[in-house]
Length: 263
Image (cartoon, rainbow, N blue to C red; front, side, top):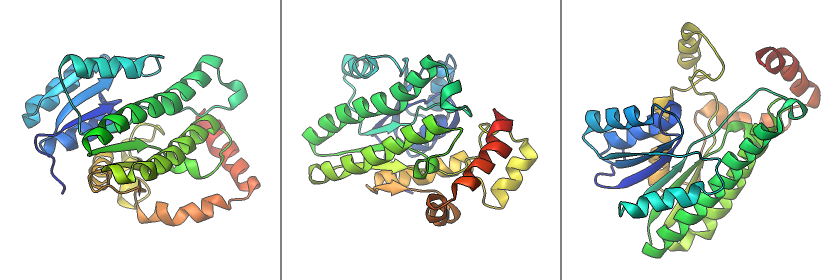
């Protein structure tokens, strides 16, 4: 396990789910935190992490789809003279819905959260990190980035942007002492798919799903080592090729049998 005692990480979407797992894993390694979210449970989550692991956890309530969210975050850091060593762009949204059936404000939310905010925060922190010659950025993409999937088009398309942007930024920063890691997780055992607990446990045991705590630990290890990309699980890594060549009729079958039913 890579340790990071005395360092500071900023995590978006930090109050619950995988974001909270990132925070707990970092805190377990001695890392202080700036926890950013728009959920009301943020303050309690930050207090719990600080009390359990004996680290500093600064909660910052922020709408990450707001036009000036990056400015707000940087202003908060500067007001407390905080200089993060790591940035984790974790916040995201998901929906099983066709593009034409998605409300305009939800479409804009996908673009704002997955494209604009990730870009602006990555750029702002990259500039600061490069000036001092060190820093790590972890951006969350998805296994869905490897193919256009009907029913989750907005999700997969914006996650594809995150992957391509992060890989390119990694190379741009290569000589500055700063690295950018993109994580492309496959199935994670969260409540996203609405599976009952017994089926989630079965899926974890047979390797179809990964526990969020396990994913967070391994993704942070890759980030701290300056790796370009992390895909969890051997099955997911092998499946990339087959996903890319999946015939259209198979994709439509998945849409009709799974996505339409879940939506």
